[in-house]
Image (tube, rainbow, N blue to C red; front, side):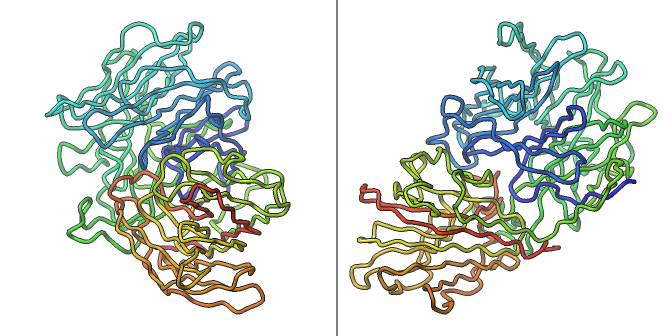
Length: 554
């Protein structure tokens, strides 16, 4: 019997989904940007229940992110499968907020989804969002968008195609434009073939609330491609594409920013599209914000959702609903043991008794080697060695998990004996290195060992509490209770009572659109330690917990 799927299926920061099916197994790859390791892979057997299984880019020889800016790094991976081999193409963005982007594209392969994945093969760097297409005759092609640094730009949107030689492991022949437009911008392209037609499936109209998905087709892989236009597609100006899926002009929908799709066919012949989306908070940027003035804030970042699709008699792909609006609940593929995958409250708890870290953790830009952490120095604890400050893009000791709802509780227990104010450790909620709330232990020359709360908002820094004294030799529990994006911070001494530090801090600045530099990721919560003296003072964490208190429902 058919069940139901509740969106988003990957909650919290999971943008740019790419999906494949191998036999009865489904896999989704999503972007990770400056977070290490690179590319998250999830597995499912029914398109409803998903499990994090792998990070293909988990060696420094494959991926170097040290020094990359906020929301740069890994963009839009494309996962494909052909004749026993998994292919993953992706972009590593080294510079973006400038005139000339550095968008380096690579390919890795594996015979098993769990790896090992190969060393990267360099591809062309025309732009970002590369995708590999495997044609029926065995030939392979890479399609990507093209960036244009000229002032003014010659085209609003441009896609380029080039053949890939799997034997020589390089692109071959000349690259050819297969899409040019003066006003319509396309990115995230994929090519599919069905009934003799080549379909060019691409995200359109930016990545914000105007985001959408369009489809074009041609009898030749090289084009020319015709864009699908239908009566159900509403446009307000010529810069908007003809979108088969979009939340554009419907701010009342839960799933905003719908677009950047990829397709999969079930064994029974049903079609589904995964796409990115966002759930907006009830707060906006101020009207004088330096960027995105007055825009809604998306604290959880861009997430992954899924929609059921169908092919028309004329050979075009459309949502099964008959309109372009993303649905919160859709019909699942047939399964004998079908049950609804409701977005129920979920707990993540780590007591650090395992010899390895949970896959849920990621670090910023670099792997957490023995220079930064240890699970064996004190069994049952995570020891973190203080390194560079929170603004560092090179050597930061930090581990974090995704925020998945607007109402959550994060807590940890730490033992730390700082000797100087340059030594800190504690619980952090952050969007990037310029935007965070840091509940931490430190040392003040007038107070001694102390606890305080530091806020960084687009490089504006303030302490939201005094330096409150903490007895030496005592473990401390730290807690951040978030309710609809408002956060109350508390602490508790071992054997004591909870003490509230600050109530209802508006955490909505930890959001897409609210951050001045990056705006492609999502809010995270975790543990960190700094020692700006260079001596590597360590902190021992007994446990870390992240509790979902239920979907926000905004």
